[in-house]
Length: 141
Image 1 (cartoon, one colour):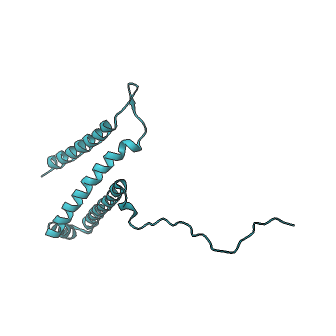
Image 2 (cartoon, one colour):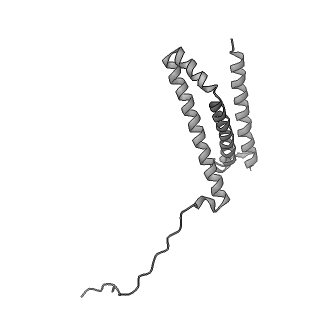
Image 3 (cartoon, rainbow, N blue to C red):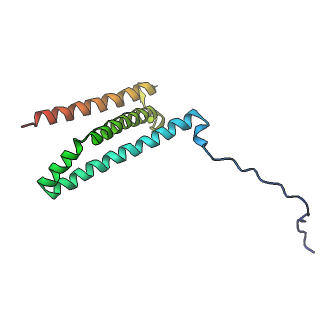
C-alpha cells in the first residue's frame, strides 16, 4: 500500500503575485537605470543617422548633398540637440558606473578611488574629443 499525500478538499490558497506595473518608479535606483537604458536608444538613433550618411555617400554626390541638406533642417537640428543631451547623459551614467563594473585596481598597494576612475574616464573622453576636433580642423581645405 503506497503512502500518497492526501489532497484535502476545501478552499485553495492563492499564491502571491507581485504587481509589476510601473516597477521602475518605486525606487530612485531603478529610475536612474531606466533613464540610462532610454539614453542608449538615443545613441542607437544617432548611429542610424550616421549609417544613413555612409549609405548616401556611397550613392554619389547628389545623394550625399541631399543628406547634408536634410541635416540642416530645423527638425534635424532639434533632433541632434536632443540626441546630444541623451549622449551626454549616457556618458555621464556610464562613467558613473564604470568603477563598479571593472576589476579592483591597486596603485602602490592601495585601492584606486572610484572618483579617480570616473574622472580619468572623463579626461580620456575629453582628450579624445579635442584630438578629433583638432584633426578635423587641421584637415580642412
